[in-house]
Image 1 (cartoon, helix red, strand yellow):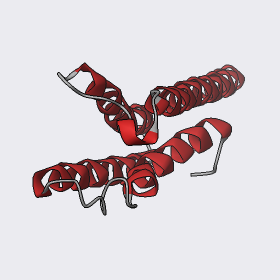
Image 2 (cartoon, helix red, strand yellow):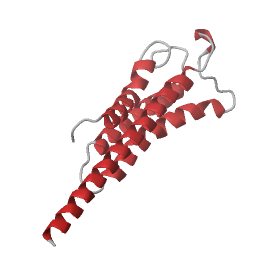
Image 3 (cartoon, one colour):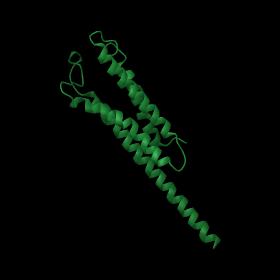
Length: 150
C-alpha cells in the first residue's frame, strides 16, 4: 500500500507507541532503578511489551489491503489508542503519580498521549476522506461506462 499522509500519521504514532516505553523507561529511573521492587519491574516490563505488541499489530493492520481495508484502518488506529488511553488512566488509581517525585512534577504523559491520539485522529480522518473520494471517482467512472454501453 502506498504511503499517504493519513497512514503516515498513524504509522508514526504506532512506531512511537511500540518504542516509547523502551525510550522512556529503559534507564535508571525505571528498569534499572535499584529502589524498585521486583513486582514493579514486572509491571513495567509488561506495560512496555504491551505497547510494543499493540504498536506492531497496528502496523500490520495498517498494511492490509482489499475490501476490508476500512476495518483494518480502524483497527490499526484503535490498537495504539488503547495503549495511550490506558497510559492516561494510570493517574486515576489511588496513590498514583505520573512522575516520580524525585524527578519533579507534572503530567508529561498528557501531552505525549494527547499528541499521539491527535495524530491518530487526524490520520484516520485524512485516510477515510481519501478513500471516500476514490470510491466516488470509481462509482462515477462505472456509471459513465454503463451509460456508454447502453
